[in-house]
Length: 115
Length: 109
Image (cartoon, rainbow over all chains, first blue to last red; front, side, top):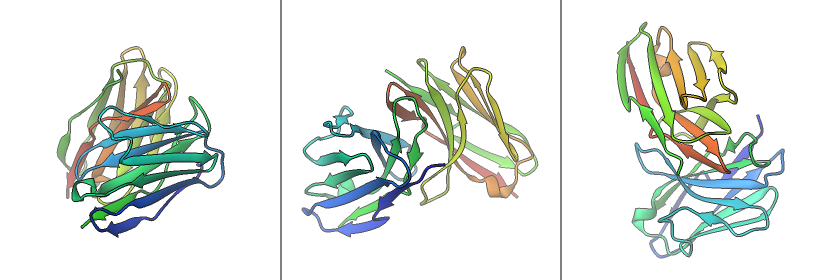
């Protein structure tokens, strides 16, 4: 299958700071990328869907100003957690695919700890 | 709104036994995925099911899809301890992929 790379795999940041997570499709062009959040022992919750060159579509209850998503190229999407708080500590996973109805591939995930 | 329900949520079983995990979804879908997740790790893709009646097998795991019933199953045959993990189904529709709550499978030696 295609490869999606996420970076960093782990990050610790202080409360009030911002942290950026990158999601790259290494061997295909991803017109659509998804961002998920997973709390311990829970399922993956879709946060937002981003299409290359367009503004991201956020799911209900997800703060747009807090979770900034940029999908500026066909191989890169970034999620920036702004003014992070301990309750933002979670496992963040991205997914990418070439287009509507095509198979999606997942990154390795980023474990964010806010102290 | 697309909803995905998975059951059971927890399953403890003996090695050598068979069991089935069910995944029901509320609307039509483009494809259905099954994933495995080990603690602290990301998702491992197991199966991608596209069409009604699709059946795929890999080792002791077999997945099937009934689009008319909006039901997919993941069947475990003669379970072994190494299959202990959390299994998720996910439904792909309208440019969204929505996950079930997952089934935590614990296989006792």
